[in-house]
Amino acid sequence: MVRRRLVSAWLVVLALIPAPWTLPCGVERWSVKTGTDADSGLVDVASSTSNTISTMRGWTAPNPIPANNRVSPYETTVWVLNATLTQYKLEGDEDYHLILSDTAGNTMIAEIPSPTCVGSGSPFLSGVQSARSQFDARFTATTSFQTANIPVQIKGVGMFDFLHGQTGVAPNGIELHPVIDIIFNPSAADFALGVSPTSLSLPQGSSGSTTVSTTVSGSFNSSVALSVSGLPPGASASFSPRRRADPHRRPRPGRDRGFRRWWCGLRFHLESPQVRDGVEPL
Image (tube, rainbow, N blue to C red; front, side, top):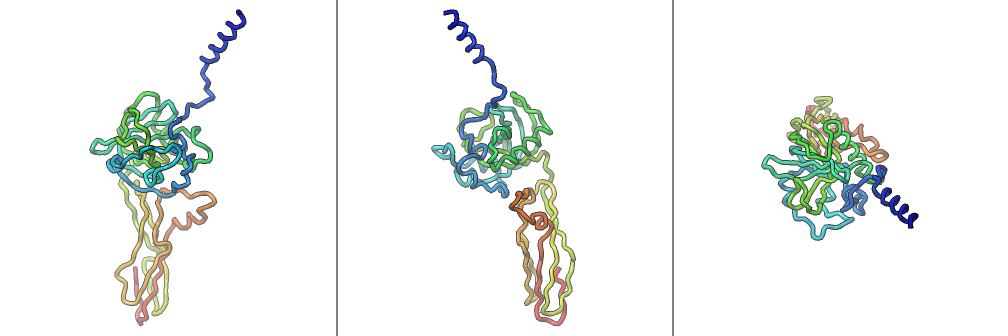
């Protein structure tokens, strides 16, 4: 009898000892939230689409919400929002819970998981690691909400969460989860074009080329499409490639060979008409 009581007492003591080596990662739709779900390959992390909190709050939530699959295009797209980060806290599942607000006071949630809770095979892992580091460099999240009220440009994958009284939640439960990039105090977005050489003189029937380079500033994150107008009759022009990619895209190891070279400029090719005088197309 005494032995049994001692064993029971030890079991109670052991049950009360916390296990610091076990992180309390999330459960509900966790594979979707961290990119280890069956549809994670449908998300192109190299491409992003700008949106607004108001628009995303207006989407119809799926019913039922799938546990291990994604609802396209809402959950298969990397979205970019310009908003105000009003509050943040550290959740029990190790996520950073961010409350985003627009100028009309509409709110939605964005979450940065702990990288240790993201599977090594997730296409979002490097982005989560980067976003977490960017956040930690500016704020220290605790288990209580803290006020930030700072403009941000935030990039993340859409995800419909179950409604359970979350602070700042959108009415349809849409979130950016996970966040894979965050920029604090983004400046005005713009881009500039440069041409080298700035002019070409071409003999009739010949062709020439110049390099058009783009320089982005601030939070500009869209592709740049190029076109030519005002050419003399018989002349033709082309770009290769015609569209410049998202400037915030990172090259993918082993897949984007020549990425840096493509980044530097776009080749512009002009075919002169069959005329006696040369032309200066640029």
